[in-house]
Image (cartoon, rainbow, N blue to C red; front, side, top):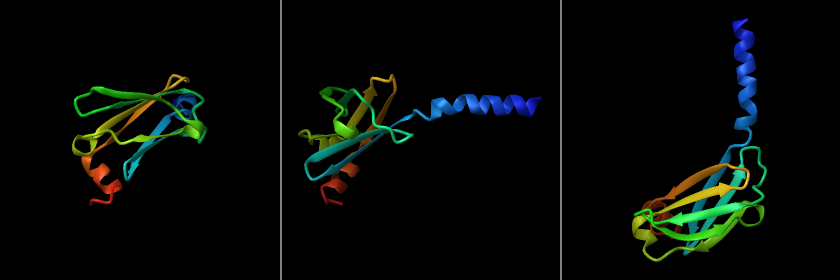
Length: 111
């Protein structure tokens, strides 16, 4: 009985885990690329990306691009302080990625 209950609870959690949003951001030169997908590999069909500075000030809001990929110019001063990139999709999921000054320097070839 206890095993059956544990198995049923584990199965009930699978649909939630199958829809986790995954966010990845990287820098190449002066360009930031943000990629968003669900853990199943499916691409979000709408939503927005918010880019914030180290003081949590909103710098820009962007649409999620085709195939879950968006690019933008590295904001002035971000190489020194880093960026917080938040993604919220129309399916009600959200996640974030932090680009540290070290991440940015690496992407600019300054490591």
